[in-house]
Each structure stands twice: as structure tokens, then as C-alpha cells.
Image 1 (tube, helix red, strand yellow):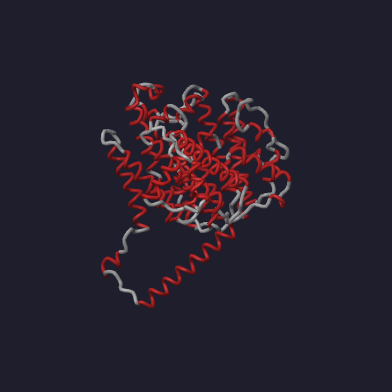
Image 2: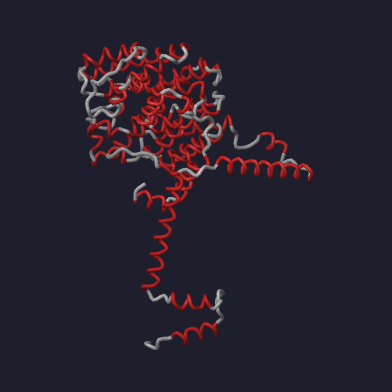
Length: 493
């Protein structure tokens, strides 16, 4: 944590509070035990930490039945993505690698060192034999699901890579855009759903609702594509469909010119609208997850996505740099998203209202965005009504005094249990000690500055010290005050 972070959290105290609460009170539903794992599996989890620290954290809290299958599933797809993203690999070599990657996953000792030296996750493929070694130990039913997803994703990536190599990026229409997002993220939602249902940790009905599974992946991917526009363009990649941006500018690079800011913001609004249309289906999907760790695993990324969508909406900074939600905000979102569906709905409602508030009447997408926001709120209202219809009809019920006492006693018992649970789960981690030390140091420095400023302006701390040693702790009356002043008056004035 740098000086800029300290200054930021000194102003945004609520975010600092969320950060401390997450570090202090978060109690994982399940905890991974590295001591019982093989060396190769521990290496796989090390790679998981390196490739995505945020996903790694939620994966390592999963139910033991799915902990290893989903961790390896993620690494396999990350390996695919690393090959697809690397523009230094010639298409003649890249295409067969992508199409046959699902076969490679079970090859003993397979690894790949053909990535460019600057590729972020190059080392994962160099040591991919650790992944294949552990993958062969996974239950056949899970391997069948993962192989099928890897096969479909590899073929889809190969198609788009071929078009990119031929100079036609392929993301020209909204249909192409949806198809690309389906291959790189929608399929992940399909695969995870099959794993959830097969393990008995989700409602079997989810398996028949492919549109809900797909929306889970598309909502995340589309939000990331909007947020990462500048980073992708710097890497000479373009994922925003021509069908959308051509309505606002003549050339894609014109979106980054200051004189086209209003047109660029209107274009980004249409992209946000496209992503927002998946939000209600994501909430519908989350309602079908029965086990808490599976719910947390699915809910946290979705809540992060709606927060990111609110951040990028009509934000000109996305065309200048890569922007992200702050750590404090992320911790608050994680706190809210690891409880239940009602709390997640509240997170969605909060950020949807932020989008609605930022929506500008001059935006050509103003009406459609307002409708999309209303659609999400309507869905939330349908499952969690803000008012009880029966109470409205029957009027407020008058409780018996005995019933009131019983309710109060029940609340008190619940409070004691919660406090007892919190106390028992409290762990003084090194990170928490470090954060507390920073806060105390900051307060100490501020105190010194205030005391020094008072001293520079003539404060007499020596008089205060003498009076305190004589036992005068309360404010003196006017006569006593005059006596003290005369006693220490220097007579210069």
C-alpha cells in the first residue's frame, strides 16, 4: 500500500472500513488444505494465484467435490486463452493448437514453450505437464464435461484467429460479437453449470436453461470488453462490433480523439446497454444455486461486473486508460455477495440506479437504457417485493405484549450468537496488522501536524502541562482564567 493509497483511504473511510471488515470477518465456507495435496497440485494452485488472484481466492473456497476440477478447468481454459491472445504465434501453428487443445489436456508430459517472451501466462504452458498430471486424476464424468467445453472453445477461437490473421477481425456485427463472447465466456458458464448439477450442488433445472448459463458468461465478458477498450486497442485488437461504433464515428480510432468524446460516450452507452440486457437472467440463474460456496463463486464476479458497468457508463476515462473499481468497493461487494440472493439483488439495484442516474437525455440510447434498468428492478421486485401485499390489505397487526417480548429475546439471542461467532472466527493476520499499523501511523502524523501548527501560532503547551500537573482538568471560570493569564503574561504587548 503506497502513499497515494493511504491518502485515498483517509478520505474514503467507508472503503477502508470495508477493506478491514473483509480481512477480519470473512470466514470461508470451505478451506483448502495444501498439506494433503500432491506437489504437482500445489504447483497448479500456485499458477492459479499468478494468473488471476481474484478468481483464485473464490475457487479455493469451493466445496471439496469441485475444488480441483474447477481449478484445473480454469487453468486449461487460461492455457487456451494464452495461445489465442499471443499475436507472435503464426496462424499456421496457432490454429491446430487451438483445435486440438482438448486432446492435449490428457497427454502425459505435454508442455509448450512457443509463446512470445512478453506473454503474461507463458510459464503456465511451459509447465503445463503439472496440469495434465492432475487432470488425469479427476473423475471421468467431470473430464468429459471439461473436454467438451475446451473442444468447442478451441474451435471457436481458431475461427476468429483465422479471420484476424486474414485481416478481417470478424467482430463486425452484433451477432458476431455475441458469438465471440459465447466462445470465450458463454461456454464457460455452460461447463460450470454442468459441473454444478453433476455434483448435486445446484438445481438440476439449470441444466435445461442454456440461455441463463450463457448470460452468466456473456455479462462478464461484455463488461470486460467495454472496460478494456484502451488496453485492447494498444495491443492492436478490436472487439467492439463495427455495427455499433460505425453509427458514431467513421473509424474505430476516432473514438479515442478528444473532439469525438460525446460520440464515443454515446457509443459506449450502446455497448453498456447490450451488456445490461443480461443482468436479470444472471440473477435468475443465481437463484438455482443451493450450496453456499458455489453461490459465492458465481455471485461475486457478477456483482463485480454490475459495479464495473456502472463505473464505465458514460465515463470518458475508458478511452484514456484501463479503469477498475477500487479495492475498498470490491471488498464491500464481496461482503454483500457472500450472504444470500437478496443481498446480491441489493447490490444490483444499487449499481443499476447509479447507471440510471448517469443516463443522459441527450444520449440516443437514453430510453432503452432506462427500460433496461427498469427491467432489472422489476425482476428484483418480483422475487423480493419491497412491500408486503397482505400487510397492505390487512393493515398493521397489533402484537401481543408477550409476543413482543419473545421477539426481542429471540433478537437478543441471535445477536449473542453472531457476536460469539465473529469473536471465534477473528484471526489477526499479518495483512491486518500491517493495515492497522498504517492507520495508526497516519493518525500519529496528523496529530503531530496539528500540534505543530498550534505551536507555530503561539499555543503554550508548557502552561497546559503545569496546570494539568496541579490537578486542574476542567475548564476554569473567568476569574481563575484571568489569574492564569496574568501569571504567565510576558508583558510584551
